[in-house]
Image (cartoon, rainbow, N blue to C red):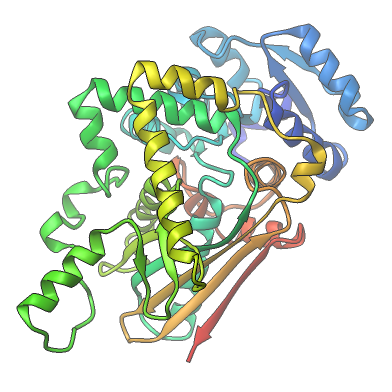
Length: 430
């Protein structure tokens, strides 16, 4: 804690507590925040805040309620100046997040959110990274299923490889081995907003399509010509090389161990967050680090059919969001912000992801990141709640700036999630 924040009224303010994921996060803080931590909930409606506090009960029933309009610069400045940590679940963040980030950056207030929006993070990094660095504010984007499993999984893999003296990471892939649960209405709203922006602006479209678009040092990142395999291949014919090049670009492909893989809906965002972590950490993962994410559909007879069908559906949704008429149809079928599944459905949610990396010395590692929790709801509430507590309670060594979970929270968050029954384990593959 810096001296400038010691006299704040609150330790944590949760903005958006009346939304679906906001309520789940508030419940997690109610159950797991240490006694004496000063928590408040904030939103636009006093009546809704009162109802949530009454519904939560326990310690949350007496939490202060703060009214705020997140698009009002003066209101956001007042709120940021009143707390040591500000957490927000209010998206799309491009519409509802910028003033909060600005206020926190100026006030030296730590900040955490659930964004999965490349353009929003790019905007806040360009505008406020230096401001936050000077004030000491840790602005930590993507503290939920976007993108903590990816970010911490790669961080742990690199840490263990370095401790073993096995070198830096080279070719690294995250496989989604098991995933049961849904995307929240807020996540879908963010996808919709970014799709519209990409269609309307060539510049935004380029930023979204740049694999290193979130890097703080884009000039020193690989160009398209640099993105080649980092390990030597056996001599092959020109025809074989062409076939491999084509296969590497196909959305559905078969791996060496016979598993069929397809796109992962969050890969385009997660991969950019992980690459930003590498750059912010001084390329701790390595200059040869190449990273992507896929969904593993297994090796059964129907696996390629499932992979192709899921891929077609995903591409259809993304394409449908790009056009007004089809977007209207999708809006009727997809959940709205603030909506979510039943408690019974959430209780059956779970995820298991595996980061598989080859190091520069040729050694392979696999890191499992898993939890018996719905990834977009209960699991995200745990990840966001523990990120907030980490910012408020732990002796972090990171400096201020627009950061990622791996950079800002490091092993502290890994330990916290393990204490809440998350599996984060790395093993060497011999």
